[in-house]
Image 1 (cartoon, helix red, strand yellow):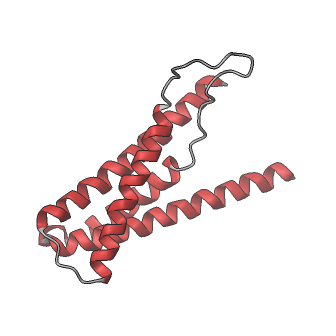
Image 2 (image 1 turned 120 degrees about the vertical axis):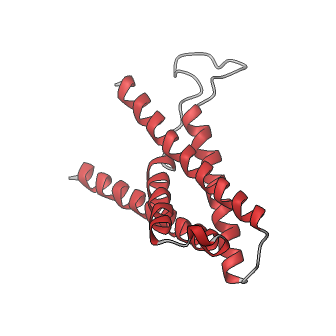
Length: 145
């Protein structure tokens, strides 16, 4: 029974993260869509929302690798956990892009088009890193069992 409750709680947590990603994608899509007429489509907005949901669902909840085995002595230089790094940096980029977008929308700022392109690139780069981080972590987990 307790295992089912833990799994349900974990699913709800990840679903909440997906909703946060979808909300971030909504703001980035709204800002970028108002900056570039060619991107003012429902398809573009839905793609931004979907990317945010998938990226935040897969890429935020990455268990870190242990720095060393329990019976092993720690070494001066450890192996970089690619999934953890991509997750952290991708989450930072995606949420920074969303924060700037929300600020621009709420304060009705007319940002230069190059900044809007930078926001779009940061968002797409961030959620792509999150998706890859989630895929890498799941492959590592599958191969370690």
